[in-house]
Image (cartoon, rainbow, N blue to C red; front, side, top):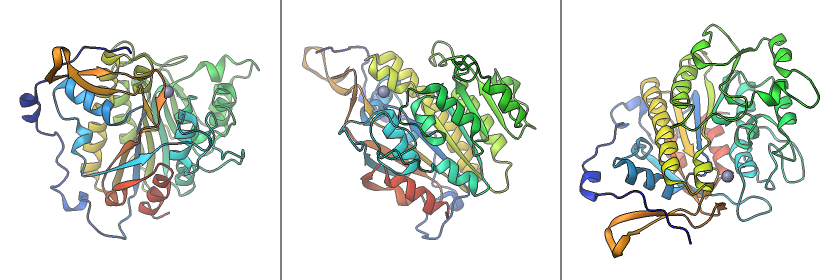
Length: 368
Ligand SMILES: [Zn+2]
């Protein structure tokens, strides 16, 4: 069994840290027990492969409380798919996006291949602006589950075509340009999208804030890691999208994914995991700062599954005052994952339930 010894941690220092966000002050923002409360905006954050151990590992290594752990409401959800006890990101993303269990590998459809609507699509139909920002290719399983319909998550070029054809998506930031432009069928989806009013950028700094529909490709395939390549693209891009999308009088739906937490788990790489968790939590800080100021925004943070079978065990020489990261698999596990909620209607997300239940709760809180 492979054990990675990298991070040690002192309880005293840890306990002295105070959470950055204090959600209790503003009555408008509080999780009041008002059954009729309606959130105008939804920010749906997904840490791919992030369960309790990933969160605590990051807190241990960074020696501070994560911002997500300052959120007032927590729940936990089961993640099994329609055909397996251990889900993949296709079925996991589909459960979160559509409220339906599906088979591993499928996206945006039920196990019987019936396509189903996603939260993003339902919110677009309700007049809200919709967006996605991810630290992987935009055609990857999790973002794909919010827009595309395919029996196989690896059909990246078909997924790119679904994204290009979607009338429901307004903004995106991520990698995956090659699936739109260097295709086996020779079709240049980006020029088609431009004809339909999309603006396509290579860099966050190029964004034309007047544009009503844009995509930013920060990479031809996947963006680099937070520590090596993409830098602060996720928190910075999320802040930019919030600034843009919040101008819509009818509100918005934004999906944010910390995609590479999962890849660090697959690699059993502690340093990579901590960096990706820190990056995701920096993005949570941007989101909560926005939601706290806005007062009409529900923030949900959850995960599609756990990756790596991570646990925290005693240090070398039976030292119970130190912890080591210990991965038990290079794959996903069946562990349940946390749900954090903040904003109007947040209290509906407490307790233990299934990942498909999040969908209905979000619609209820949004009044849809
Ligand atoms: Zn994975």
